[in-house]
Image (cartoon, rainbow over all chains, first blue to last red; front, side, top):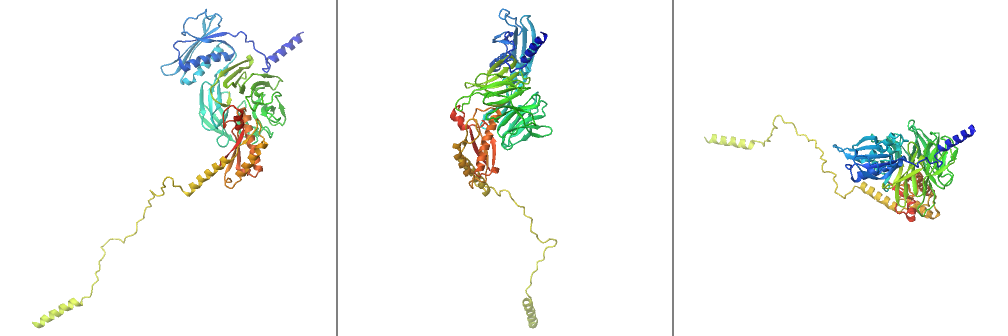
Length: 418
Length: 185
């Protein structure tokens, strides 16, 4: 009897730790949170967007049920308990400029049951355009104060390449909602940015003016360093955990293959040798293997191999056209084209799979869903969605089985990294 | 008295007629050296200035070369591809033949050829860029097989970054799935 119970418990534990199964965390009774803004708060574009960002952040954490209406009240006004009888928390804020022109936000969060403040902070920014980061920090700090699971992804940067004209693309840094945007590289065709480290202090990208050249940019020093150049195609697809090695797609003889480049020894090692298309290499299983996209079976799909070995394992068996993968640990998220329409719109859906299980989990249902990227903790996936001529930024919280899409007005994105 | 008078006249006549012509030598003033020629300083200012529109023979040749290059480039035919494919369709082969003949003409031979692969908007990420590269390689190989020197040709992929049209129609997508050429001096 005891061994039977042990077997059942062990099995349940194993299932619960595999995100590819449709296990939905119990999110039925999320604590409600209301937002009130001080009458002295900034109005206009920044004011309106700020409250939307707060609401969006609270929803995306999947830890709160944010009430959509934002009421007006002074920070220290008495709480209307009758209005908030079913609400757990009240977030009040005031956004304003100080005497020196800095943007400040005072935020207070009350536990409505006790009437006591859980969080009381003053935030300051010199550059008012970075106001989204104040909103993200408020929600992050509230989440921390309540000891909910970590949501550091709210504060992380996104780096993306945006087409600005024919053969022209800029590299832009943004917050995760793409509201704040700062152009880092301008002029020419600059593509495939990739974060160089978890701290997001530097990134790699390819300059296509003349011979394709890979550069590393330190975003705090504003210094660009050439790494290497190559004919035809050169993309940094992934960076090893310790930042010492890069997985590159290169095509020295016009033959796209995966290579591994050691930044310290400058050794370049060829990983794949198929005469078709092998691209988009990503490290998995703590760097012991590489997953990549290959058309070696006629259509692009996902394979894995050990570096130095000739044996190749097929990972995905479903779908006719699977590409644009991103990996975290042993998980792989990819975009699968589910129609073959050369004459009409196509559907691309995102799927999650793992190298340690046979399960595949579909993450989206319609539209064109592309550029899936894991957050640094692997629990959230960011992607771009195009549906009925509109573009949106998608966020999927894997453990909560929740997906959010926010409208996006950024123009055509070439590539993105988170 | 008469004798002395005649004697005086005789002496005077002798004095006047007897003097040979004298050359007058003018002595040079004391202390001055003989004159030498001074070193002339070349004055270049104002030299070599050309009027606007007037060109040297070398510049004229360069501009003529560029004009010819652009003319040949404009005559080259783009090669089109099927959805998701990088093999050259049979109906595109006459265009490849035409381009090979064009690039092999004597006036085209001084120029390098950049073979540029392009895609429609339906690809994702790196696979799209690789598809463009394979399209460019297919065309390069086909041209090489028809006598165009491979050393003249370089290839590059622009993925979906260089569309000739942006409408979301099948006609536009077909126009973007192409290889085109840029000549290099």
